[in-house]
Length: 283
Length: 151
Image: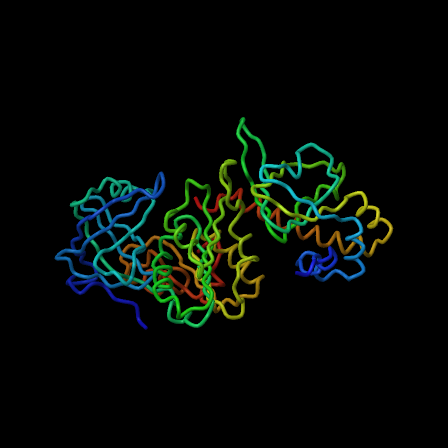
């Protein structure tokens, strides 16, 4: 199934449509979520894993993955960390403010391919944002999947993204959620240690699992090593890559990654398609 | 309900599973079941490493104090081994280990195990291979933690 293409309200994929901020909320000290309604209240269908280019007039445009519910196209949800000029300006947006939206772009997580199998979702830091639509989808269509495991790692308990939702997911009897942090004060009663240490004890069948991994590249790299050690083949591991995307339609070449354009061929790749490029410094 | 013996329990844990049955019996001779309440310490930094543990239930936090604050740097849970300093002179613990919740474990007498290793070098090498892997895994985990993955 092909993921949705840029919204047809736009005359051209390079032309943004207008979006209105409905709500902004802080997730952690430096990470916030925007709910956006597209002009005229038009639905905005997308597939889990796709991203939009968000344009702040007079400031600039940034690619941000969609982190909302794919079954609720009435609003767009984006979670981002303030790391640059645009996202710093974006954090000052208030309900009613407008911004430009281009998208959705890129490939999607293989939620259909995973049907009938175990699914392990592995996210590090803000990498949970592009995977949250997958979790929403898995929960909504729970009977289509075998075991569902969510592994999440963050730097500290204060840096845990969507903490309330993680709590709700882990309260379910049909989903296994394991969270770990790199360091914590004594009051933290959960796991401490790197996310890779969760993999050996995660309940999934390595021969019948689809793994979806998102986080900083170094985290994904060590995660894939551990998945391989557990017996998961590269063809059943999917990763989401991040590069400096500009045009988002495979023209400008900013996000070229070996023979791939992250914006057009990715951001979600089956691992065997990028295995040779992974952790190669020049790329 | 069947009560499992220590050699049977060792046979179910990946760390010891592929060890010869006679070696598991050998180890069981140095082992006993122990229980800790939440908040109790299993290891104390600077103290002699007289035991190591196989955690059966609950989890334990390895802690260190820095700048008058206590940080948890790693947690060890069910089926995992706590402690390797008993194997390396001067046999002293480097960190505190505190039960985060009630913990059941098998405690191994370090002196007893070391003596058996000296007497039977094949057994000693088998055990050393397992602990080397454990130490390597923990070293790798520490390096990854230091890399601050989620920056």
